[in-house]
Image (cartoon, rainbow, N blue to C red; front, side, top):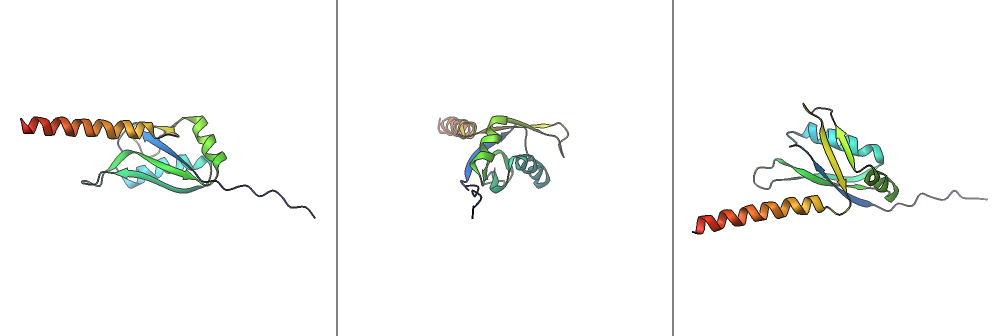
Length: 119
């Protein structure tokens, strides 16, 4: 009796960054549908501004299988046209460096604003 080798489940997270603002839930769903072409997703999320609850231009997706995430990372960029007036480019990244850069830029702007207000 032989058993087929079970596909090993090894959830793998990747980050993404959209080239344009995400105005609505339907736009966010279009992005996730495009990301789903690589395989089954365990979780996905666009980050939101805590004050306005608007979608920010980045987030993450966790693929159930490492191979699916690796395939997505090989692609590096997706173009999502469904629902957008102008197609939205989505960059895929293992490290989340685009997200960190965005957060650092926001911190720098906030610090400069506070310094100006204190002068």
